[in-house]
Every structure is written in C-alpha cells, then in structure tokens.
Length: 157
Image 1 (cartoon, helix red, strand yellow):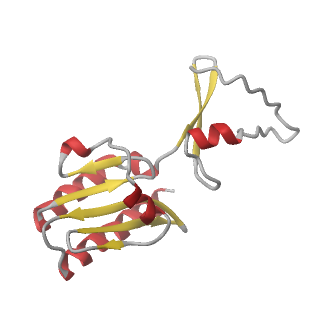
Image 2: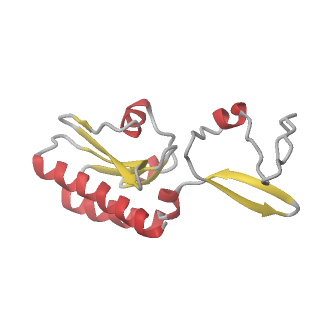
C-alpha cells in the first residue's frame, strides 16, 4: 500500500472526496464506477471494469469472431486489452487510437476497425479487428459484437 500523505474527512452523509491527483493517477473520470471493499482492516477503493468482470464471455466472443473473420480480434476496457485472439496482447495498456474510440467515435480504416462498447449511456471499452482488408461484412460483425457485449453489460448491471 502506497502512502499519499493526503488526509480527508468523512462528511455527515458518509462521503469522502477522492483528491484530483489520485483520480488523475488512476485514470478515474467523473461518472466512472469504482469498487469499494475491505481487505484485512483497510478500506480499498479500486477502479471497476465491467468488461473485465465479463472476461470469460468476452474471450469466447473474441474466439468466435476470430474464427469467422480471421485477423486479430480484441476487446478492451478503458485501460487495457481484456481479450485478444493474439494472447500476447492481453493486458497491454490501450494506445491513443483506442482512446479516440473511448471518446465516442468509431475508427474505420482499410486494415483496422474499432467500435465502442456502450452500456447505459457510457462507453466502457472497445471491440476491434486488425487484418489486411476490412470489408463491409467484417465491419458489421465487429459493430454487432460491440453492441452485444454492451447489451450483456446492460443486463448484468
């Protein structure tokens, strides 16, 4: 456990403000879910990833879509690659290309397609495909996969 040197008081409603410096260092934005739990005798605040919680289902989607389309199929949450048809990619931090998709715009290029995973009005991650040529069928399958994962997240919450 790292000491931060920051001290906060609990208000009369039981709330604690998380300092901006901590939110920034953990990449926690306004509206993002956090998990609160007790570990030994400490209260732990952790960034929550609904996509990572569904890792088993997401991994199955990746393998099925990879079997259909070939190429590198991957799913990210807001921080890292959660599932990929290229296992070495799993756990990699997202790059600036994916950050653009997390702001709401899909990326469609000749060799790359990435669509946002939307759930309850929030973008929680992405689904992408890298391969030599991205045709209309591949676009539809990747977009549909992002939509299905989003619907699964909706029903899980």
